[in-house]
Length: 79
Image 1 (cartoon, one colour):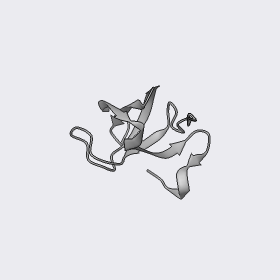
Image 2 (cartoon, rainbow, N blue to C red):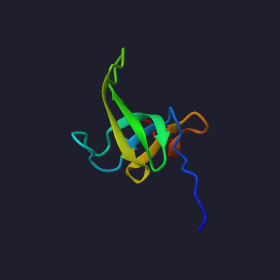
Image 3 (cartoon, rainbow, N blue to C red):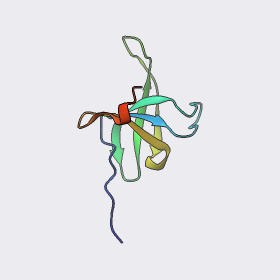
């Protein structure tokens, strides 16, 4: 069985594909820590100073990559 490396890395901007806790699908956050099978995602205010509102553990299958430091915006999409 081949192992597929996940494309989401630390500091990538991600969106929730489905609700997680109090956060609805489409909520945008930053993957701040990657672990086997998922990521710790920080949900922050949009406006400066960008205070953290929550940190949630999210399986990779529930995350959609929006922006990466390696590739920029995904599919022309902006958060």
